[in-house]
Length: 455
Image 1 (tube, rainbow, N blue to C red):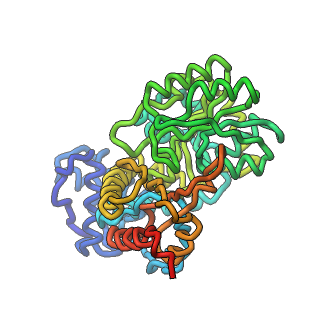
Image 2: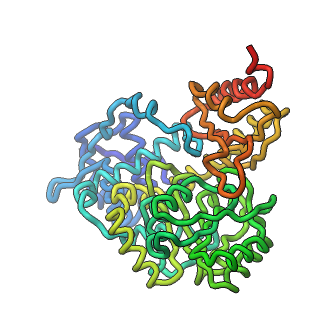
């Protein structure tokens, strides 16, 4: 048995978490070796001058993280470092760079905290390999509610659902609201996912005219009267691909139109958690009409395939659960357990803050390299919306940059109303470092020179 005690409990966290952190840290440093027996809980409590229950909770937390294991009558023993394989290069090589991904954390301390969350998952692995509820456990939905509160949302818990990603959630909602041949409205230039889902469900997708603040309320009103739509889809914050954010005044105008016509809104708030200040969701102005989707792909990681969704009513939440069960069975319990742990221990917020700072730095880098180009960007957007110089075609630029580690997508993928213009979405996030991004942006700047196509 070791006489181990933590070096300090002054981390600012609750003491049980500080003790569990100290155990993890001393395993990494080699001070605690695999198989060592930790002091009995009452003895450590006496040495530290704290309650026995605090130490008991600390040991339970360390066990949940996968760092120790307890045996009745024998004590608590160190499990040592959690075994990890070397990174598989093929995983990175298979990343789809055309997707609008957040920058990936590089800070060793943040990555360590992310990996520690896997200890909780591994400690409950067998339970998590079973079928679960279609919209998350109560603990998962409580974590979701806590996360959504950062956007000013305080929904009834029975209206909250953990769902398998924003894309699948949109499909499930549209399966409830529509039938083939129905009409759905969206922005004139919009997220390709809604186009794909609408096409799969054989829906008529009609784009609404936009200005620099988003869709025009009068154009929305006219489209509702002309087409009798079943729903409106909007991505009002850091809109993909234009990066515009609809100001609060315009959101209130849109909500007023929706209420006049009792039209359902699907509000895709994928980027709403990133900026420091963002206008309130439209859902707060028309909660009885709004399906609010707070996806985690952009603020934490796309591979999780999770979203936090608020249904307009408990009955709608029940219908959503039935639709998820039919289309996807359930969100991944492994992903849910990891995200819930990250939210509870603060890691998720750490990732969000990193994404916020790094996306701003990458926007600044794009501004330096492409200073002579016309484009639209925003401080925390993961992309820019680039207007090509006269005489330069979008297909030619995409072809010239095909071997580069940068995601380019032409306007064709986004355009619903009118003809696609000579524009590209240029992605700034994903696995590329700032150095790699700078190199590829310089290559893009060269590719955008009209005379580079001659000869």
